[in-house]
Length: 91
Image: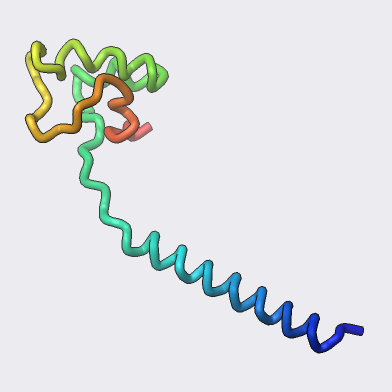
């Protein structure tokens, strides 16, 4: 049979589990909405959709870095790779 101490310990663990789960749930519910633009569906970007992400990331530099025809805005974080980490594809 279960001793009173073991029942108390089990009750404590169950309450702690529910409390931690509630904190995690509140954390995710309060997360900000995604504001990063997705990869556009257009004739320029569609060829990059079937590529693997790392391969497609290498192609972004030709248009989106300062010397390109569509440079990133000045407020964009400095990065030279992993574009599709934030700018997700609708695959």
